[in-house]
Structure formats: structure tokens, C-alpha cells
Length: 148
Image 1 (tube, rainbow, N blue to C red):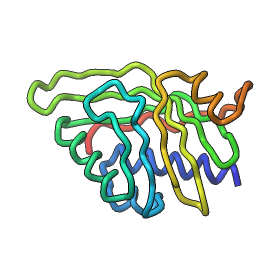
Image 2 (cartoon, rainbow, N blue to C red):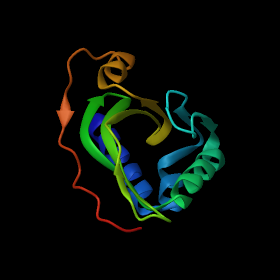
Image 3 (cartoon, helix red, strand yellow):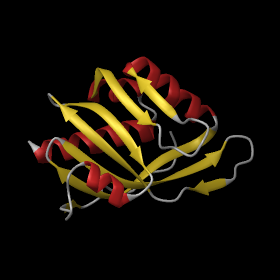
């Protein structure tokens, strides 16, 4: 089941990068939890359920012409997948391109859908959270194409 979980995370990230709310909803449980309590930006918080998560996403997307998650590494952890990533955004008003430093999402899967995603600032902290001291990596998906 682990490989399927990695592929599900890849599909969820692709949906986010396309801003495809329907595909993202399809990949997640209706009661999905997005834990951004460790975030350092203004969107810090916990988001419960698809509606709150989609509201968060739309708020984020409204600020940027382009906003993509660039996956640098995927680590299979059974019912969890660790994705080390960095963000790339282009400001809607300014056109300025900003690449964020690497962050980590731990995706928890249940019944073939995303049950939660938890943001960590450090790879080691995320690996510890899933009980890994050594990592088993999968190659990252192809880099996203610019645009919506």
C-alpha cells in the first residue's frame, strides 16, 4: 500500500499546483486536517475539513499569479509520506518571483485518501514524527510547469 500512498501524495500536490480544487477534494477525506501550526507566516493555524482547507488554499492563491510546490524528496513511511519541498510564487501585483526555503509536509493516509497534512520546518523533525531515523526515498515527481 505504501507505493500507492506516495502516488496519492504526488496526485494531491499536482492538483494543488494546478489549483484544481475538485481533484484535491477527490484525494482527501471530507474531514481532512491541515496542520500549519508550525508555519512562520500569516496563515499559521489548524484547518479542519475540506471547506476550511479549500478556503485557506484560495486565500493563498489569490495573492499569487503562480504558486507551486516543488517536491525535492518523497519518503515512504507506510501510512504516512514525508515530502520535502520548497515553494515558488510569483506575486499577483508585483510579478516578483519568490522561492521559499525547504519545508516538509507529513501526509497521513487513510482508506486511500489524505487524512491530514502537517507542516514542519525541518526534515529531521518530520522524520522523527513518523518514527524514521533512516530515510527511504522515492524520486521526486517532475517539476511543475508554470501557470495555473
